[in-house]
Length: 509
Image 1 (cartoon, one colour):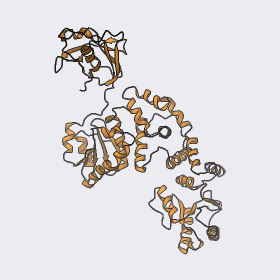
Image 2 (cartoon, one colour):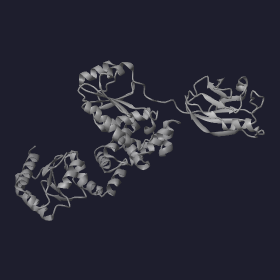
Image 3 (cartoon, helix red, strand yellow):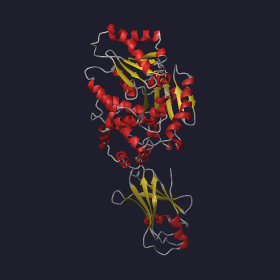
Image 4 (tube, one colour):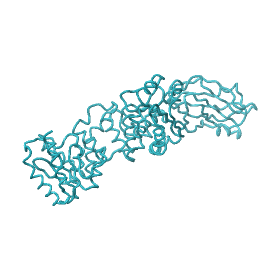
């Protein structure tokens, strides 16, 4: 239990026998817990049986109501301990006053009234400790423990997996998150992570009292304060995501509303995997713009976990105020209601936050424009081709990446996006060849495939941006055809054959 000392002014009063001060002296506000015991140190031994006459503890939030307490000597008769008879009220202010006239055993009296104001922090919202039955069950698991994390691996989970997760957390995840949540570094708590193996392993874990969530890849078990994931879903991004949830409760002792909790965990885990210092970048902007054309950004669903609105609002706020801003909200949420801390730092109330999502489409489109993407051209093009599918549904992100940066060539059967690395002669060679096979197909089709011409380096980047390991030579990309061709001589017989086969497959599917 923490103790705070009222020493300086009281000691001086006895030692120097100061003349009676016209006003009481006060010091800066101190933060305390709800179960705090006060400790006052004097320069001389004091009369304990007089203490409750000259010492008062009042709650300034309830019309200065007096709080009953017991008074005892501490280690010596110069120290008085004051223990409230009831738990102090969280988020309230209390004033401890030692009035002038407080007598010492030698007969000298305190000449100056001294007071100290305290603020009572909210009761910690740390998740419950792991139950003994589950703790005993986990002793049969593989285990790795470091200064920062404890990881268990169940049946069919290798020791290498357990060690790898622990190492990734120590060397990368924690250091990344500490940049934005510095209190992690000084916390003496470590997360417990359980990686479950096969179905039988999950059943025995549940029988021992562990919580199983059948619909989630990973989860926090609130009844035993454990991060859980399965062998098939385990990855460092998921660990970072679940650790953010754990951190809110165990490091900051704060109950974060679910829609903020989930959106924040997503954004910081994504930031870790991408090593980003900002919430918004090209990839998130493109994702939101794609959703804006497919679904409404705003559907009055802000406070629902995993909603587009929650994620849009959090992305915009963290982009405007910085990834470190949430750390300040959490600190203040330990002293005041979360909603109040939120409005204090972000300038909008809980309910007003949804207004951020109303401007989300414009916000993200402007971000893309700033980075050279022709959004207006893309919208105009899609409107002009509203009666056909410009590209298959899954290829929107590819189209956004290419539009405005690559040259667009229209033909009756397909469209071509050619990178600046592709020469005019190459384009003519491709168009000339495809013209020879045009009669093979029905020109009345309402959908057309996409032919992308690019350099090898661009192929690698395009593949990475679209979650493919590589595009070597030529290959499919979300129902589109990508070729690494930069000169007419590169339009080889094998590539011509590949184009024809792909077009045939597309039109007869």
